[in-house]
Length: 239
Image (cartoon, rainbow, N blue to C red):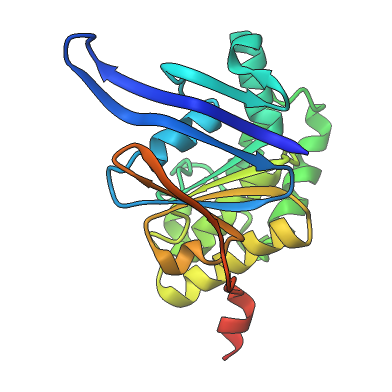
């Protein structure tokens, strides 16, 4: 089933007389349950594409459909609701609240979820436990390692049980061993939990953990190929 469909999507900044194209004529589709890497060098437009796909920004031209509905079919409140319920985000910089505990950080998306408040602690604690961080539940981000911060960010992304995980350079601030641990978690979200995963990266090595790579350069989709030999983080870790 096609989950995401982009047709001739463009994102233009600046004025009509002096436009700057961050995306140019992006056309592709992503099926439910796929693990897709969007790869390209810095400034290629891959993060802009993530922002468009994740309802964090609007495209300028073309058509973007999610579950068969274009972004124009949603009101602003509906966009926020879909983003909160259907999508989870993991970023390179973690984006955790510095003065909040692990538990408080993971509960944040529940504030806008419509889920009853008396369920928040249970849901957040369950995700924290799944990330192996129960012993850190009352710690603040300053008391955590980089890998622990990213696992908190993943727990927060999962607390609303989203269908789609957007991971923007999730290993960019981590050492290689910790990066493999994080990629193992992300692969399991796709393989074991059947979530659609869209990974943004500039590294071929990281992209090959996905099953398919969309390569973006200068705002254009240059190629869209299946990964011939997918990397498995847990196997690499055990070597």
